[in-house]
Amino acid sequence: MARVKGGFMTNYLSDLTFPAWFYIYLRGLAFRDGRQPQLLLFGDWFGVTPGRAILSILAVGVVSEVATYYWPSGVITGTFDYLDIAAYAFGLSVCYFFETYERIRNG
Image 1: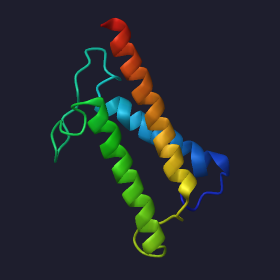
Image 2: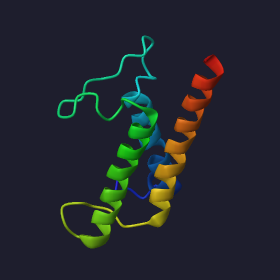
Image 3: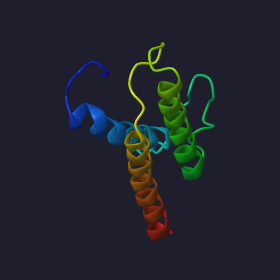
Image 4: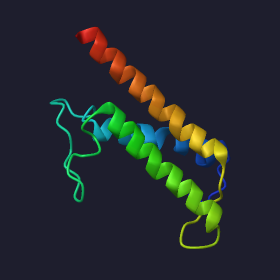
């Protein structure tokens, strides 16, 4: 995606939607039975709680962005942008809010 000139679509929309989609997947919200997937290396550690899911996904995104700042022409492609981190945080916060609200509403 780094070489595709798609404007808003590749620059920010993917940063907004992919972390949110991964949160939904890790928490098991995408499955009818609510089961959480077992990741190969970490098992279900990342998706055990909503807080752990949001913090771990955000940490990976921030590390990825910081890596593009310090190694802009290395293995990692892309450019550093603070708005990418803001998009990660916003998309994850929306998922976290709705999941927490739904849990409170349903008791």
